[in-house]
Amino acid sequence: MKFLKRSNGKHPEDAAAIPPVIDIREITKTYQMGAEELRVLKGISLRIERGEFVSIMGPSGSGKSTLMNILGALDQPTSGQYFLDGEDISRLSQTALARIRNHKIGFVFQNFNLLKRTSAQRQVELPLIYAGASNRSGRAKAALESVGLGDRLKHLPSELSGGQQQRVAIARALVTEPSIILADEPTGNLDSRSGAEVMQIFQRLNREQQITTVFVTHDPWIARHTNRVIMIRDGMIVADQQVAKPLVAGVDERPSEAEELAGIFQAAYYGEHSAESAGANGSHAHDDSTGGGSGIPEQIAEGSAAS
Ligand SMILES: Nc1ncnc2c1ncn2[C@@H]1O[C@H](COP(=O)(O)OP(=O)(O)O)[C@@H](O)[C@H]1O
Ligand SMILES: [Mg+2]
Image (tube, rainbow, N blue to C red):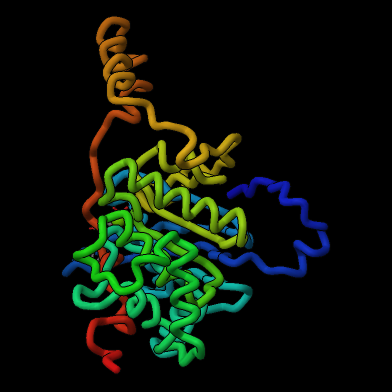
């Protein structure tokens, strides 16, 4: 496949010296279902450079979560290579992969995956405990402050809104200073205002701290807030495009329902062709099949870090 040139202002020699954060080559994933083979990923090659902000789109069942689980070292490809920060991790043991997850990857899930009886601050300290890091409470507080939750440290998930819970999950993903943040439909369970808040945080983290971020979304409007959109269909990349003018979360308003409705009525009057463009944002279809991606990594499972 072809890679677009990105004008990130890097000197070409610097670019050569710093490996991409993610460099996967001809990744395939095949599940054995009884006698049948289910080929879910059919040869995916992709490079993501440091500081990129990328969204992955595609129909339900196209392999997005499978790909994210491989990128997140939660699962291994059937064939192909995966270089993370220049290191080939395609054939590592489970223990080595768990270490990579803990040090290099921050996950954000559609359903937040927070522990029910654990305060926000404690949730964010957990990955630091597993990493054996020092100054855990200071770092957890700083991470929560960076997502606007400095005044919610002692709150339990049930005492927070959906958007706030997702921000706790983002702080938990950030706190280990990973090479990359991966998020599988992070706004999928949020109303549009909370979704915009979450997008605002991802945009700010990317802009101010150059945090490399890749997320899956079903929502074209959300995808337009990122700098690059990759489309997957049937286990293959079918498009890979820079976003010319990314939307700014919290500033660019989503078209109102009235405008969407007007678009739909217009389609009814003027025919199918305009129906397609008007309907693109009007669909409320959601992808609930998060595959294996919704499971909390076992290293942050409830109880196993009781003090
Ligand atoms: N552990 C698994 N075993 C067998 N089939 C799976 C497994 N995980 C996912 N699949 C199948 O792989 C395909 C892609 O799934 P997934 O990656 O979750 O798609 P998406 O996230 O794009 O909706 C689906 O047909 C799904 O049923
Ligand atoms: Mg999915």
